[in-house]
Length: 449
Image (cartoon, rainbow, N blue to C red; front, side, top):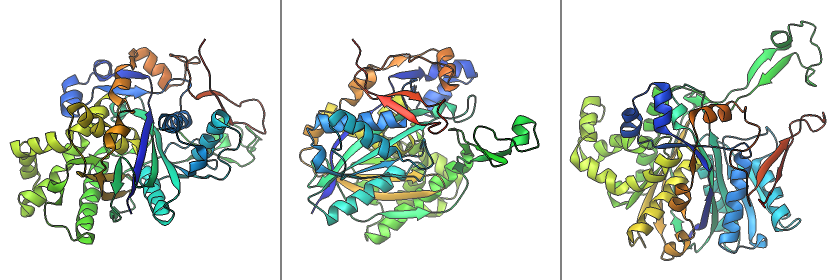
């Protein structure tokens, strides 16, 4: 029995900052970002957008575009590393909002949960639901990857920012893509990238050593959290290479695959924290498999392979299709690998490529750290699914913002949306007055007159 993605949809910010604009204001050579890293745009959420609105809007498009009935859905699993609450999952917000639009309590028998492991959390959610469908082939599940990849202003991660969500219907006998039952895995606990709670005493904040009641907090220590991560770029890159190499080797072992397995893949779908991350890191596997394994640790030799015409032609065929949307959106954390999948399918639809029965290789990564390698086979009805996606058409309609607007949005100094929401879930307000509901987030579905 085949199990995989039956339908797919997405939601992205409608605003973006041109990378050239960022480069000019940060005194960075534009060619370094554009030609070196492949960056063109950096999508950025508007005032009314967050990981909940992205997830709910992507799920609603999935349901409406493919005429799904809520009664068909027995699971809504969300992968995210941008949770807005330490207890209440994004998935519970999504089911609540969908019920407001589709009917009261239509998801009352639907399981909902979030899964978090940096950028690989949505792959974990996907594989959990694949196993569920294998055991219950008459059921269907929705998996949503939703994130806001936000970095500190003027940091080395700033130009990789992005946001959005991808929603997928998981079912037996899928129309788009069926997945292998085996997965290569590599994991190691490291601090290459993390988002810690930072603790301060009340005296540090209030200059009062008597532990006064402050913001309804009785404890003398106060935990503060910000969306931007702590990260070590070079170390994180090495962890990425180590994990994907180990996971790839593990997949070869458990599937009894020959050397050069990836040469059988029509396309390679990798987690792309920035557009060219895949091509700059896959060269290690390429070198070990097709060139000189004994020289794989020789950095100068690996660099020479990366510039070799054979490798460049390989990249253009296998990795480039996934890079197209990445260059225009930026990092989406858990959603990046699935944005790459969408980009690849939409590219082939434009090129009128025949993909049926072709195999895609998936290489996922999450900091902290873990990688998974698995395969997917394209199904015969893939074109009918992808024709409804309109990814590149949507990206063409996005609107640029100037640098000053970007900085104000980043600092949350803008009170009104740059582009008012229309026919989409939007953040209405965050409770600030009622102490019993302090921090509660409320949403609406506005219509522009």
